[in-house]
Length: 274
Image (cartoon, rainbow, N blue to C red; front, side, top):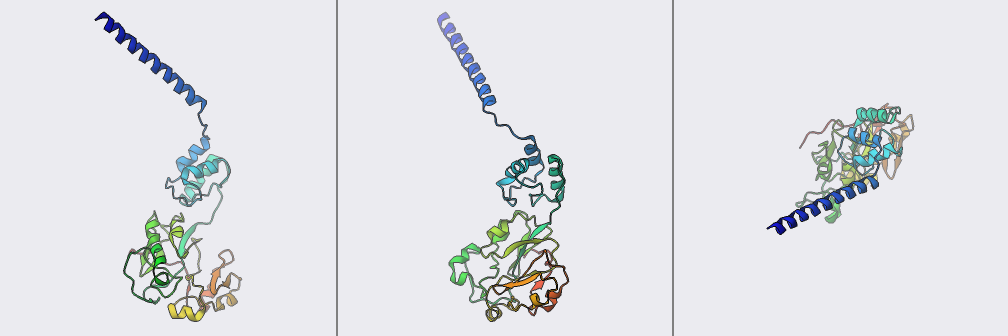
């Protein structure tokens, strides 16, 4: 019995010594291979929204925090946090908060159910990306128009976009400019515009005028009247579609008044869920 007790005590002592040595080794290794984290990076990460949407161009909020701390990204790079977050990050970095123009997503299509024509009735999977495998890329006669199946709606983490009367519409007050709807749209119809943009061309068709009119009653026909009459030279027509340079636009409204198709409009009202 004595021999058994001695063996048990010896085994316990050996286990204790091994555990102690292992603990010392791990502690030493932790210190030796510890990665130093910039305190500014940790502080910035703490004030970022934490959505990890990728709208800033980095792999999540931690990636942006590291870039700002290293001086590789401006303090106003986060599109979701807005001015309050910009001010906090600027204070952490000890710099002046850079004033930025608030951007929001805008869908360049006005081809609602009563305005855009259809080549056929479609029944099947309601997903915009899936339309690449159906005739003409979808049932709408306009191959540039919104398909209305809501891939952008599913992608938006802020419930800022809904399909209304067959066309996706962005609620600019809910939009955080993360860019996920832009990436999700297979037609490339969504782009960022200034929050306070007064006039925007709500069409993306590059077809010639007669083809546009055959497909949609409100599509831009590329006539150039808007460009000819714009006093500030903000409107140009390229590939049969008008474009407004928001940096040059003075908001006079001449282009909207002269447009025969009335496709140049102010930012539409917030969307109502269909």
